[in-house]
Image (cartoon, rainbow, N blue to C red; front, side):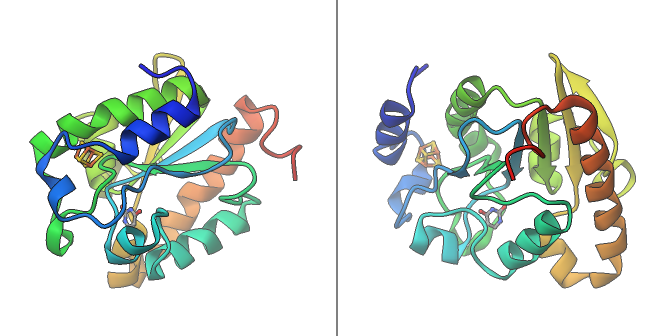
Length: 193
Ligand code: URA
Ligand code: SF4
């Protein structure tokens, strides 16, 4: 476990703990406020993220930013965003269980440094890995689970919303519930902006 961000980021950028290191262009560690009370977790970098080294910068990222702004959240101000795996799976396939297992130590280290009050899982993969293995995203999105003093919720992945816009109102409801939970358990998130 690294105690400071410089060390954590340097070691993560050099990581060769799984096969994804062979095809990546960049290790996508995360973006945002390292003192955030709210942490968002996606699945893994896509092509744009691999090229730019930042999470959620493609079309899905633009949609995510719009939904964040609707509840006064901003990736550069009052939240932090990271992924389950830090390197892009080839052809954007789902990260394999062994790749998730190899990479999760980095995320755990990030969580230990950030100490968030709320974790939002973007999509099924993050929800199953972090909340529970049998999570049913279509039924259980928007529900808060308390785990070790942290409130955890899964919502639909932005890429899924682009494929299926009929799911957007449901996802927007999740963000409204998130705003209420932030008001309930966070002190800084809405006072910083
Ligand atoms: N999808 C994800 O899950 N994460 C990203 O960073 C980009 C797309
Ligand atoms: Fe290391 Fe994670 Fe990249 Fe695999 S995906 S090489 S474990 S940083």
